[in-house]
Image (cartoon, rainbow over all chains, first blue to last red; front, side, top):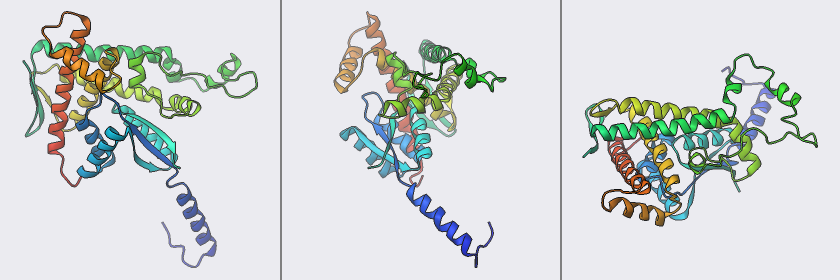
Length: 101
Length: 208
């Protein structure tokens, strides 16, 4: 990456890129749904190992799935959210992608 | 009687009877067959054929891909009708059109990754005791989960009450019906998976 100091054009370009990335940074979310088969320990482990969440956060999300029926476990650009949903499916969790409110 | 998974210095280990390992391996093989049959029904062979840069064109030529209004039809992969396959290969969106599109993009690779997990699990079940490295443990765990999801679909476990019913069925006297036998297998694989992931969670560093 090179320095763009002094170049107005590049700065504008950067600002546009920034706006674009802000616009697209949170519009999609990964929802994991409760089901009577997946084990609580397993679900917590998947959240920890795949998303890299702390023990507490993973546990909290797992409990939310269990008690409320669903939990938004991640959000981000559409492609990333879709990738995450497929990953959740590869672990056997029921997950869907949806547009953030 | 098996001894559940526990952490060792080099991963995880479970002691299982020969018939238990064989049975579990058979269950993995059954799920593999089911996924492969789905792949064949979805025309994976055509999709993976190397020569085919014209597949899309030929589909249109054959009148497959375009509907009467000229819009692209949501053709190709319907959601699986079978309950077990539907659990293993679920819709990725609540919106049917969106779900169909995502299924076309990702189902084949999802199926392949599950088949690879199940094959690796069968390999691991060849050895006595069953020993898993840190890398193999999640793979084995995912395969166990696929087996559990399949058994759960056959046992019609749709809510917590159903799960309890199956648990009761399994804790009864010796299985005399197919359903009771399946309930026993479900309870057994649940117990194995629980022991494996409890051990894995214990070993996982707190800051990960």
